[in-house]
Image 1 (cartoon, rainbow, N blue to C red):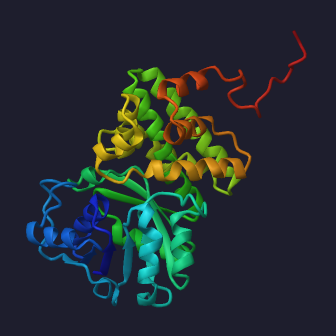
Image 2 (cartoon, rainbow, N blue to C red; image 1 turned 180 degrees about the horizontal axis):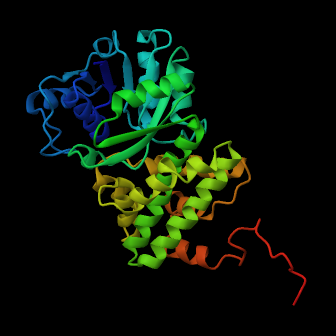
Image 3 (cartoon, rainbow, N blue to C red; image 1 turned 180 degrees about the vertical axis):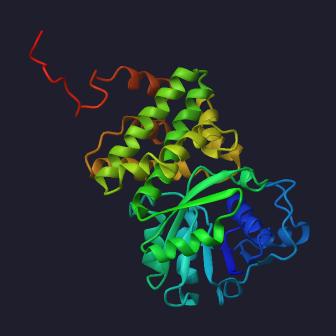
Length: 341
């Protein structure tokens, strides 16, 4: 079995750490927040994030970074997206050459417009950094509900190594070389999920949500292809799969925040109510900047940004989307005999 550390002790990192510990791996969990470490050590349970889920006694919980990084076969970055760069900077000097790191967080930095994996590589260039993503709520993984994800890596060897560590009878892992597609799907879907939540908060029905999800994947695909991602990835687990679960689930903090905004809460009030990092808010501005940079049409993202950052109402955003200039669903399609009446 492998020695594995988790940097970050939120719900997702904790659920994965518990899963791997149950399957015999030697696990260390690190948090920068001393109060969180003491609470987890004492209660062996993340009462606010994963209530009722016990953390095995075999898992070491520490605030000591050196302890969390020394002689590890795999380091899992489970840090919320706004803190990935600062943690990567802090840990860089402790990371040996070719250390395997897998990032399981999702997001895009609004300043540099880079994905989280690229941020880790900028700060820890000596590491071998892969990504794990897909439709996977921590609350369900923690109780062993069947879940499927995909791992992206630069080499097949690394992808297979991460796959072997994580895969078990209820957590199925595929592998892929399309890292940018996996990361974009996992990041932009959080932005679309905010919009889906707002539609629910406004009281709209299944027709509206189905349209929102479908046109959302079209926007994700346009940006992804422009940035070099593969359509197969964007139509797979880390694209449409993750989009569906995040737009529809009670566990989705992005959907829940959007729901409150649709109900009339301010963005600040919604975030305070959710009480966790809402990755879609952090990524929305970056996604809109990327759309402009690559000259890609993303009207849902654009209107959501007006709601999040410019004080527009969610209901007005929906009206603007519905009354846009009429067009074809897919402009590249055409009629063979369009000149025949």
